[in-house]
Length: 252
Image (cartoon, rainbow, N blue to C red; front, side):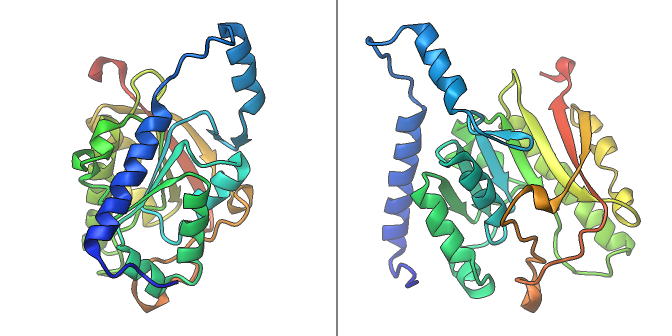
């Protein structure tokens, strides 16, 4: 795929996609149907993939090759309820991920808004995201990259900071009624030292549920190392769980 040569064109394309999302979110009255008929249609159309529904407004953070987002989109049949983001610019995704561009193209064809250069530590200030509220915000296996040995104090502290800042920003983008932040995370040493639950409690989130993460539950998902020359290679998952956090009521 040839990348766009003009930054202005990319910005215009993004604005057009944002306008399409805004139009999609507007509720239009239909004089030909009563409320009960509308409710029946919604129930009939809803599709699920594990914890996620086509009726939820979903934000995905820190995507690598976008294969997790695409797995959800294929299960739903449409991705108009999804916003998928990555820290990487499009050029880096094309360079490092063999299926990245192909996955992005299919996501966009299915109606997903794909955003690049989104830092999970500051995303609540993003010009578009700060105008939105989501039912589910998903970050699978957050990691700052391999700056030090995985079990070193410096590496652990950097990852703890990433998770804390992500949760603070995600909390600001949640729908108050039913919003949840989902973090999938490896278990055992040194990952237990990240203290996810303790970090969440300090910023006004409580652990609602913990469920095993199984890669096979998401057909087509390929977990990626995402850093360095082996960015496109998988990492060993081992035992992993999805932590589901909700805002603590008194913090709302």
